[in-house]
Length: 119
Image 1: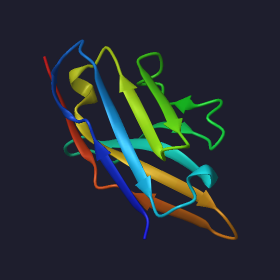
Image 2 (image 1 turned 180 degrees about the vertical axis):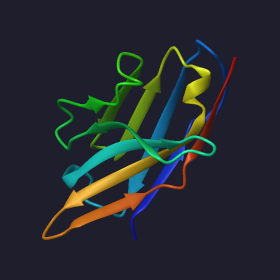
Image 3 (image 1 turned 45 degrees about the vertical axis):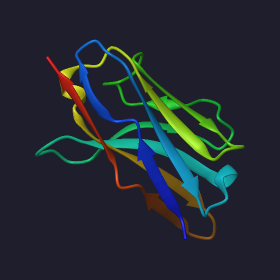
């Protein structure tokens, strides 16, 4: 059974930093593209960042580019989101997402971790 468990969320002041972690189990991690999404109160879930299995050429939403960094550790099946220069608009539940493309595309989601940025 695939599990994605996020951690590292919390309350931080604007301008501060947080590092989110996602621990994956039950899947062939090196086959998975790993992503972070977020959902702010009253808004739809939105894409934040993605990193392919190789770890090269990560891609970011414009809203976080230059402030957030996604990385992964294939040995320990972990993915991270380093968040710097946080803004109140970054307040959201952050979700870890795994995409595995076989004969069909499989999607897995964590339960999320809450990030609150105070002004």
